[in-house]
Structure formats: C-alpha cells, structure tokens
Length: 79
Image (cartoon, rainbow, N blue to C red; front, top):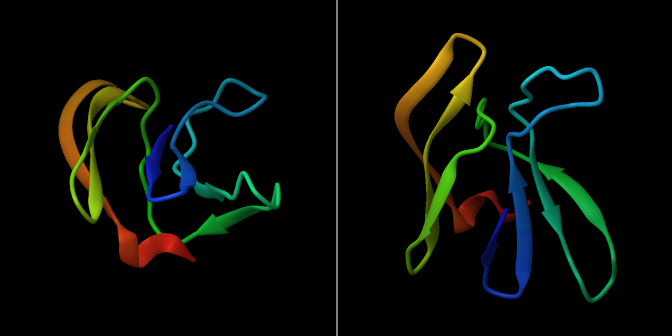
C-alpha cells in the first residue's frame, strides 16, 4: 500500500483464494471508508515509489511470474 496525500491506497495483491488481483482500493483513515477506484495493478508484492501527484508501482509477481513492469497510479484515480 501507499499514501497519496491523507488517503491510503492498496493496489493489486492476492485475494482470499490466492489469486492475484488488479483492484485498486482507496482507504480514508478519518472515516474508515474503503472505495474501489479506477485503475488496474495486476501484481502482488510490488514496490511503490511516491511522486508529487502519483505513485509508481514497480515489479512484483503477476499471474505469469515475476514482472518488472512499472505502473503509475495517479491522484486522478482518487475516486
């Protein structure tokens, strides 16, 4: 997960069945509200690099194996 401003995001990951998910969720710690937002990050265990208005999700594990793909999640995806 990572933060953009005062909001946390979870991008990708593994679901309850062990399958890699591409969902991006926004978590507002003040209200406790969790919202699925636009975007797709189909990896687990990726690293994140915070930039001024976006985050890069770098590498991780995909359904096909290890990947080096870099994906950008922007502030526009805040939902």
